[in-house]
Length: 76
Image (cartoon, rainbow, N blue to C red; front, side, top):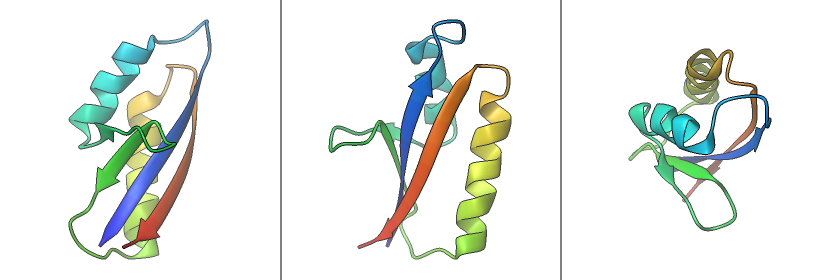
């Protein structure tokens, strides 16, 4: 199964962390405490294309919030 992890970098001039968390949770992410900020559990193995499409959705949802993110997916 694939899991996709996010690391965030927020600007003091942008959205608050709680606002960003609400956005990401609405996309299906949950907070993570294992070295990443958020994790998305696909519940299945996904293609690289699906991961890229998720990254596009994240970027669109965070547009204007002054948040940078790093995405990383792994297989269990």
